[in-house]
Image (cartoon, rainbow, N blue to C red; front, side, top):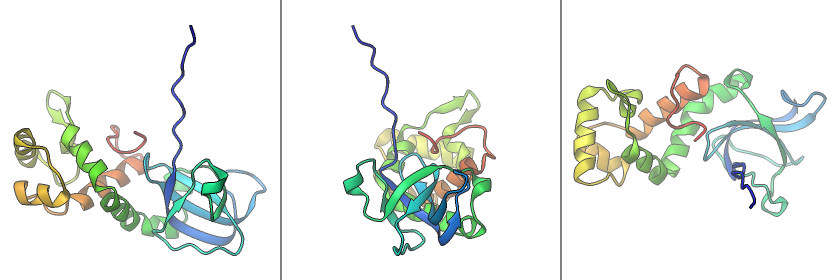
Length: 189
């Protein structure tokens, strides 16, 4: 009988928050070179990435950081996890916009989460943790999704009247990344 441990889940893709051609790593002492600060697509973890020299990156660009060396075309290695406080001022300025793009690009994932969210306590539903969703919207969303699950952000907006659900989700993700929330519903799943 063998015991199987869950495999560690690594990010396959990340979105660029900031890119500096000549920088020092905040994670590995003495490591210098072109460095990208990014956010992972699946688990929303902030990452520091060493890149190849002479390669350019755009803020908001989706890059492959998968484990297989063949899949990496622009990076050398993922140096490690960053905290929100480790981010550069430029990365902090761009994070909300980049997360909105990430959420829109992965709409199905976030709609599935919205469709599955449950009460956290008898008095608090996980939907209420998303900024802009109070008791009224929460009740309308639960009733609407009980009839049929949501299929898109536009579907939520038309059936419930909640404006810009992707922006509200992005705001919640930032709250979770900064550590200002006690309960995470999106980060580090």
